[in-house]
Image 1 (cartoon, rainbow, N blue to C red):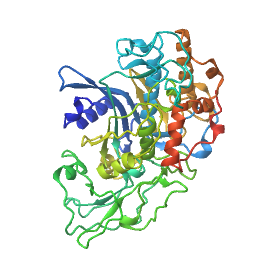
Image 2 (spheres, helix red, strand yellow; image 1 turned 180 degrees about the horizontal axis):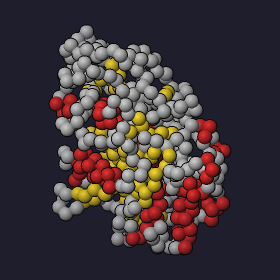
Image 3 (cartoon, rainbow, N blue to C red; image 1 turned 135 degrees about the horizontal axis):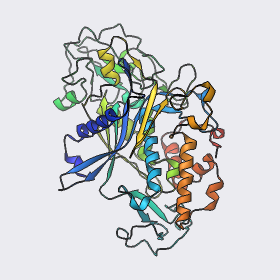
Image 4 (cartoon, rainbow, N blue to C red; image 1 turned 135 degrees about the vertical axis):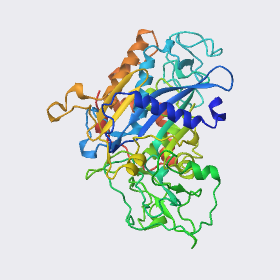
Length: 505
């Protein structure tokens, strides 16, 4: 872990860097005066100068808050199904990784290692950092002994970030789903006569589920005392912004004994419980939600097949955020920290990202249960939901999703249909309207990477060229084994897309 971990201002520094980067992007696709959006990013820290110094590099940005309904999903893989900021930032990060693969030996971020299991390496391996990886030759390795799948997927090498580089995830608002459910108490004296509970889902297709929106939360005297750090970390807004002030309690269990001295309520999410999970009781106040369950993002009339962002982030903490296809080339990529802005609750985020995945056993080589640091930033994103809702009499969600990846890939898509801005019915199916982040576009990047490694004389399996998207995902052996372990031991009711939606090439 780098020197950032000892810097108490790290979360704010990274948030400022992300927002500054976003502000420099063109205006196209950004919210208008009364519109809000969510912002997310994946960034890295490098050691810099002395042991106590580091620098931040933004690798991807994503904004957005909408999803495509189940009936509008494409069999061609040519639309972006989930345009929530967290997912957009992660898919833009995948695009960054594919771009780096095209010239891997000159990458300032990545390095190549020999396979630790088959003990063979390729002519791409950095020999200055690998002393015992075997001879340098163009090899294709098979499954190793001891019933352990080979870590390099038959390539003879595996890629990871260079030593000293840590990967971080930022989001301006608590992710929809389990991470945004927590007990709250309105304690702001300034706003004691104008209290309301917001729906903390980033999904814009739903309205607040609050059946008690006209009720006031009267705080008489709280018997639960909190330290100053926790009180300030969950309080919104900053000095330069006045609005709703919501404070989360330290307890992660919503079934708290409620004393007569205080009335509790629950910060709510629009994400719905997945079939097979415990269901929300939808009672008033503290008994509105259950916690710890899998949830999916709602749609407007047409339900989605997109899991909540809290669930997706928890899964990335086991499988890595690189996905199945990039697992042919990369070790699992885990976050060292997750930084959250508005509606921050340490207990809820720890439950969502840590506690639900603890104890998963029998994961293959390189895979692990990763528990990144969960940090709060009070740096205000002025296009964020909380800021806009408190400064406008009527606010609406932005319909666009912006994606950017290092060094200069920038694009705007329409959140509700998953295509590039400017798409209309007449040109909807044109290749030119496909997003760089849709599945078929990333599949093309994968095939370009295969071609690049073949040209370098690497041991790439020729059969991979003939497989469709679904088949390629299934042949990513260690990734799929990890996914099975996670599903069998924790996320048994995870919603998956029908295979026929992934048969494209």
